[in-house]
Length: 306
Image (cartoon, rainbow, N blue to C red):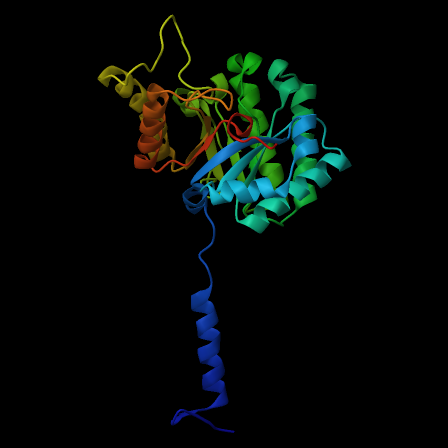
């Protein structure tokens, strides 16, 4: 049988091959950590699954509002055991994000492990992620897992435990979903200078990213002085040095990174001042120049659900 289309003769086999080729060429590129980082853009840390109030008052329309403001991902902080009720709530959050085109990242508080990185707490943390990973399976391909929110406390002095937990958890999650995007943070509350202490599985650059951050609550006084006053050359240089520490690590390892939470310092109860605007502009511009996505800390400081 021969078909004539627009004066051109097509045999069915040739026509089908052309259609098949079109499908092949239209197939999207596989998602890698580098492409994922590009999609993250600017986001917000949220308490929709960490506090009782956050859980109770969550409204999917908040996700719509965030998207309308230009936010493209949320870091969903989670505390407590992975109960059936909590898993169902997380599914609700993830589905709301997917509906409005916002990338969800689940970040586990892991408070018990940070306070006491014992063998039993290591096992507890790994099991937490095992339950969550199996619950989501290979669904929601843009959903990211941030393994430990701000490694600190006794973990600052126990890198062996931190790296061991990361290695075991990454392998466990990727046995369930080989393409799940996973974030790991260094000690000292995710200090960029400590990224080099991370020991990540070989050949994991396509699906493992680093999370680091500076100024989670704005440029607070440290060592008797503020790291940002009027934006002097020295103040800007000090901030660039911290960002560049992450950039150098990225170039050396081939892993992408993400700033999981920084803040200009103002809150919903205060009117921002000129120095805060200047600091926010500088931080946003420097991270953009470095091609590093970031989340702002936090929704409770900027969004009034009432």
